[in-house]
Image: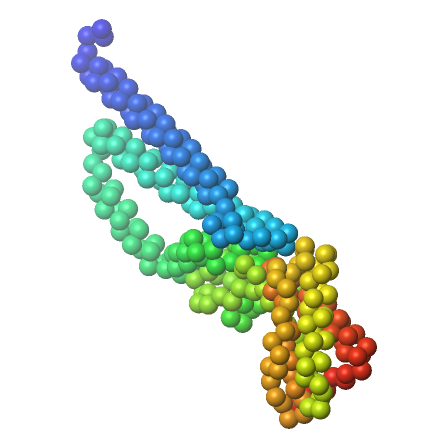
Length: 287
């Protein structure tokens, strides 16, 4: 039409480049939709274990697990979307450069050298990101959990791929790099346990003390407010747990919803002390 072959070649190249870019953005959009759908399904699908749990107290556990699955799935979805965008758009750019007859071998070599240099300089950052990825995949902890990461114990306020933000009992905020966490003690995952040791004199009637503690356990389990909101199973009396120099030590224990062990422990102490005072059985200070 123009009677000039270079113009025809230029127009053909321009159309090809436009098609490559359009195709890349279409593929990117499709990939993001697929990832979003997978993330939504992962966030809403319940665990197999939750189907076998019964009782109103487990509703709080299921809600917490659902929120954790949602946070973990959204974080992984964000990472996957970024990776997909880099791979798809990067491939499209290289294809366009090749179409424009721009040699990409030196560019790839330069990028490789730059990547190695950045890798050496950002080893700690890469380590943090990899540790954060595995932490999310394995569900080691989530927002709201009380954890011990070695030297710091606190409530998790935020989790990213690089750092975990904790707030301790004094209100101090700690920023812990994920790559430096070598062990995690989670006090809020699944369920917690509240217990109380009850020391009584050697001449106390062991059977009477055990019966009294079992009555306290039954009363706590019969408390609708505690059973529906904080306690997962009926409290148990383990009998004589320890023999000290001056006393027999009984133990009463209760399985609770995550992070409710402190409140249930206080309730145990109050009710056991009241029951012992009523029965005239004194508690003995342990050595």
